[in-house]
Image 1 (cartoon, helix red, strand yellow):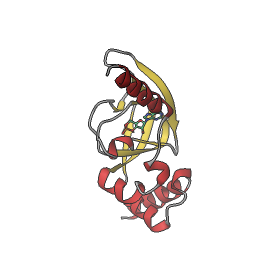
Image 2 (cartoon, helix red, strand yellow):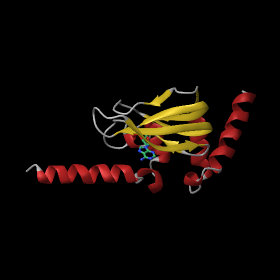
Image 3 (tube, protein in one colour):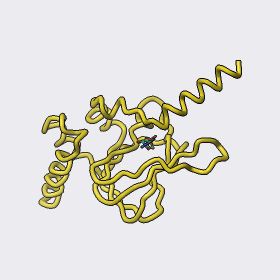
Length: 153
Ligand code: CMP
């Protein structure tokens, strides 16, 4: 029981340091800390695969991950960004369609805190910054797709 309490307070301290979560009240952060599960990955592990279905949200607590995206069915994945302690990912599949929009792989040893869809929607999904996040690369994709649709009609 003691270890559970220590872990809970460590998670609380960490969550308070995440800029996106700064507006969440203490009781909500405490509920988040209650439901988080820890997951460990090694260099090259796929944490998320583009195109797979998914129902989990991730917060990086240790290490670095790389986000890549395949722009077409036969293309190579393109590097988008790296994320590290305090960054989060996996929110896109939790709103609307449950398809993962990019690959996320571990670059070295990584620890993530994970929460399921239901807790995410109740506790974190209320944050505009998380819910309304749009990535530049996805805006470009949407533009290309709508232009292609326009020219094909
Ligand atoms: P999701 O689609 O659930 O799984 C892959 C995740 O990668 C996605 O949620 C976002 O959190 C993240 N992601 C997608 N596109 C980008 C991008 N252009 N830059 C940074 N992260 C991204």
